Image (cartoon, rainbow, N blue to C red):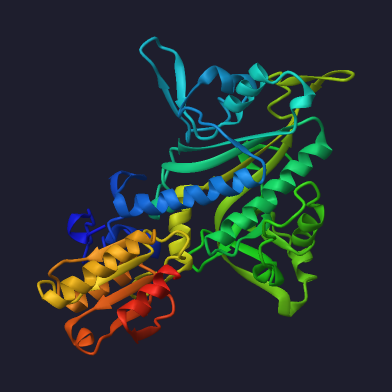
Amino acid sequence: MRLSRFFLPLLKETPAEAQIVSHRLMLRTGMIRQEAAGIYAWLPLGFKVLKKIEKIVQEEMQRAGAIELLMPTLQLADLWRESGRYEDYGQEMLRIKDRHEREMLYGPTNEEMITEIFRGTVKTYKDLPLNLFHVQWKFRDEQRPRFGVMRGREFLMKDAYSFDIDEAAARRSYNRMFVAYLNTFARMGLKAVPMRADTGPIGGDLSHEFIILADTGESAVFCHKDLVDMPAPGTDVDWDDLQHIFEERTSLYAATEEMHDADAFAKVPEDKQLSARGIEVGHIFYFGEKYSKPMRAVVNGPDGDITVHMGSYGIGVSRLLGAIIEASHDDNGIIWPESVAPFDCAVINLRVGDAGCDAACEEAYAALQKAGRDVLYHDGDDRPGAKFASMDLIGIPHQLIIGPKGLADGNVELKNRATGERQVLPLAAALAQLTGA
């Protein structure tokens, strides 16, 4: 993509309303634009990152055996009355009526709807276990939306729902999502710690939040230090036997502020105690028959009807952008993990109009595109310092800098955004590094 043809409305000044790093940088880099309190338009740069995060989430859900569908944003109030949650959910639910005076709501979550889909389509225990997920926009009418996409009213969420014949099978499904979440966040360059958490309005008696540590985290968290450094389980696991991985992670102390037990935490060796601020990036629940029983979600079993056991598993896809920025930035801007960066690399032309620079940049741009790299060509007339600043601000991982002085010696410069390392080398060698050739 040529920058001259891209829509990238950068801001020189930090908006006064932005209180945390991710909000400031997302506004300054033109990733989002606020349209109402807690509601944002996703501009091209932000949308590119959003889709890359979504793709990783989808791939890891499918690897763990979940099947994707798509449910609507609007739901019938009667479904929520069946489960008993319609009146209990509170003012965060946006309640509306259509032209026929039917009561509806903009979905904050989908337990009721997925249960209705299941009970109308699945009839026998032989079709279990089943895990269905989608990535869909949600709305929760936060009383005080703030911190940009970290606590907005409209947000993109991946929510999955498991159906099993009994508690033992449901806990195996829970473990699959537990492991899938660890792998998902690791692919985004995040170290997420699973912590026992309050089940809240979702319900149930087993719940874990996946927390990344950040100074600007929304709540206090407490854990054993070893959990932060544990590597992700990876994909080479026995997906039918994950209890040992679950026990390895949950045997060490980790809890959010709501679930914190000071006496239990005191038993952790003092040099292993970690108290910090954390950002929730995922939340999983096992709630048994909480929804299936009142909504009569049953299957035919060998000895009669069986009320299915359920779990739900959420990841804040849009929230993850803010969380990644909070975890990975410096004074110059965003440092994207390569897996979610909006562009893989940038070609920076230091003197547009110079025949040699133009020719070398066009050669590099064509070669990178041919190799399948997502490349941004900075072909504007800005001064070199401004070009460097803008590419650092938006966090392009690899920057190929081409100017007349370097070309006179047969060289270009290759910069790594994360490490700051700079290499001076021939163009062919730089392209070989960027394309893996």
